[in-house]
Length: 99
Image (cartoon, rainbow, N blue to C red):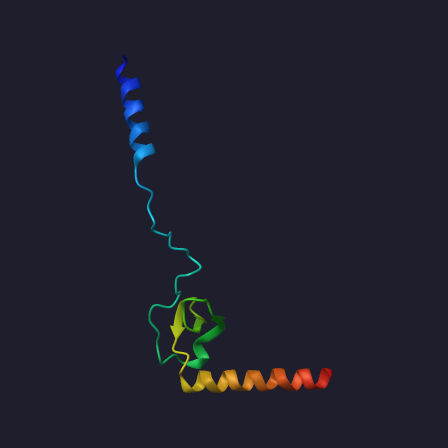
């Protein structure tokens, strides 16, 4: 028999009889974007805020700064809590005016 044929046959046997792994692939969607947060970011240096909530991660706030750097802000920061409260109030007022 040809050596190449023996190697291919051996590889097929190994693949067929190899145990199936029960491990699940890590989805990029399930990873938390923010692994650490900062408490002090000057508000004037923030260009935009992004809010993320994924099933396996807590509420995440990502700030894009004017220097194009992105940082994760602690959602419990006082100024951010006030910002969110004001935004919710604006949304409620807009909905009431439409009704």
